[in-house]
Image 1 (spheres, rainbow, N blue to C red):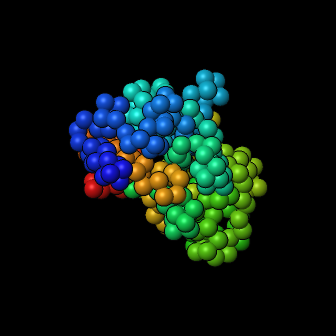
Image 2: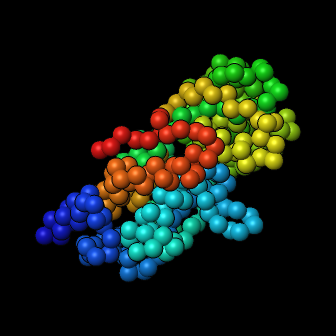
Length: 277
């Protein structure tokens, strides 16, 4: 009976009314625990403009990932304000999930086979492509084929680092904790390029005091589907979140979140928006 109730709760998420407090959640489920606590705890990055960025002046967390998290909080607790963000760098995401430091991670978290052995992922809520950010005056680098002998900055524990190591020949990796460390290194000439997902690179460029000093190469060389990460085998929570994502893609909430965050840069969602399921 418990399994049947769980499946019914997940199916309710697909209905226009959603999965708010009125429907109730299966006893003992992650959703019920969060509802009773009254606060959703989300692991997110603090240094990635357009996805997860903490304003040093106001302390507010902004970006597309933050908006996705607020939509979850609203459905679970009745208000998007009932949320606590915890900074989660790439290499700590699995530990934060398995150690129950957070309820879920929404942090430009690419779905991979290796990570899926450690955590469970939702369906993709965003599709990105890996690219390069270089100094605007540097005309030597116009694609990954130009990286031989060049030093590339990327983040520990990221799929970007794995792809550079496994698929791109001749580069020298400078691996750091967060991408915000890469921009000063690039402008100072300590590295020749930054490599991660294209929209993250756009955010790093646009946040800089002199965006014209940086150039996005604009030749993506890898697809990165982002998922929300949760505890392994928590299928009821995963199904609930998948229902939310499907609803947002269908009812315009995904588009509004994109417009208000990533869309500000002039980017379009044509390649980034997952297909409706």
